[in-house]
Length: 267
Ligand SMILES: Nc1ncnc2c1ncn2[C@@H]1O[C@H](COP(=O)(O)OP(=O)(O)OP(=O)(O)O)[C@@H](O)[C@H]1O
Ligand SMILES: [Mg+2]
Image 1: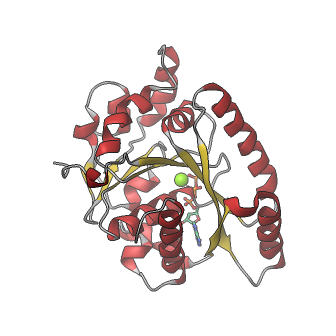
Image 2: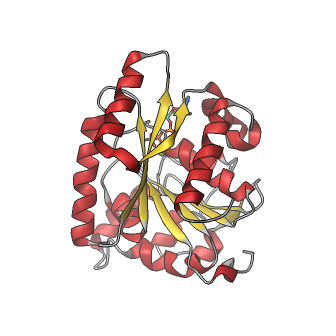
Image 3: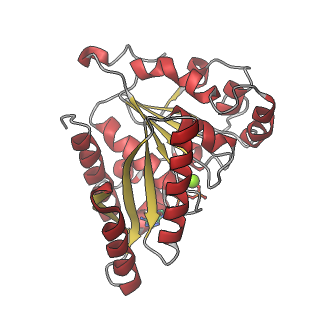
C-alpha cells in the first residue's frame, strides 16, 4: 500500500514528537497542518495520532475506525504497515487512534521494554517517510514517553497566554530527564508560538518573554489566532488544504518552510 522509499537521498527520515503537557495549546492543529503542508510539497509524510482523544484522526476525516489503529499495533494485533492509512491528501499517511488507546497506557506498564515499544515499530519506517510526526496527548504518561523515546526531536507549541513559561520550564526539565534516561540524542526541533493575537498586550508580552528565554529555538513564524484553523477539522481537512489563503494556513506553510530550512531540505 505504501509507496516505495523516498531514500534516493541516502538519508533516514526524521521523527518529530509534537508535545506539551499543557492541554489545548495547538499540538493537534500543528500536527495536522504542518504534516499536510509538507505533504503538499510532495514528500511522503506520516502522522501518528498518539492521543486517545483521536482529534487528529477525525481532523483528517477518518471515521468508523473500529479495530485498526495505534492501540492494535501496541497490543500486537496488527502490524504497523496494516494500521497505516492513506488520507485525503496525496503523500500524507496516518496511523490513527481510537479511544482504545487509553488501555495502552495501562497494558504497557507490564512490558519489560515499555518505553521503547514505539521506537521498535517505527525504526523501519524511517526508510519510507521523510518526516514522521507524533501528536502527543496532554500528559506525561507512557504514550508520551514512548513518543519521546522514539523521536529525533520535539516540536513544542506554546499558546501565547499567562502560564506558558511555567509549562515550558516543566517540559524542558522532562526533556533533560528523557535525554539522561531513554534517548540521549533527543533534540529540540523548535518552539512554536500559537494562537497569537497582536491586539492583546498579554499575547505580545508572552511571545517576547518566550523569545528572550529560548532565543533561536523559537521559530520566526508565529501562528495567529484564526477561526479557520478551529473550523477546518469539522470538514475533515487541514486548513492548509481547505482554506490555503487564510492567515492560519499561511502561518503553517511558513512554518513548514522553516522546518525544511532548519533541516537543510529544499522546498
Ligand atoms: N491558531 C489557532 N487559532 C484558533 N483556534 C485554534 C488555533 N490553534 C488551535 N485552535 C483551536 O484550539 C483548540 C485546541 O487546539 P488543539 O486541539 O490543536 O490543541 P492540543 O494541544 O492538541 O489540545 P489537547 O491537549 O487537548 O490535545 C481546538 O479547538 C483548535 O481547533
Ligand atoms: Mg491534541
